[in-house]
Length: 41
Image 1 (tube, rainbow, N blue to C red):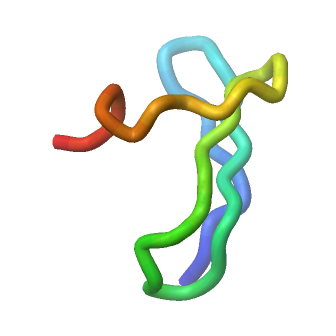
Image 2 (cartoon, rainbow, N blue to C red):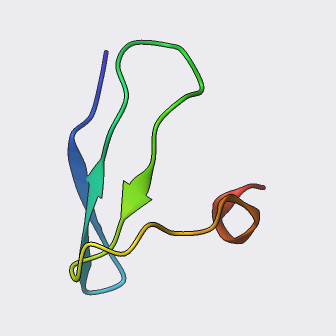
């Protein structure tokens, strides 16, 4: 399963990448790529 976007904390995000591979990016509403250290848990 692949998501292409999500809504969290009153903001919309776009998600790139396909399938189960941990490759891709998360972009905020302005199109800025989020740093991976900010969203990795």
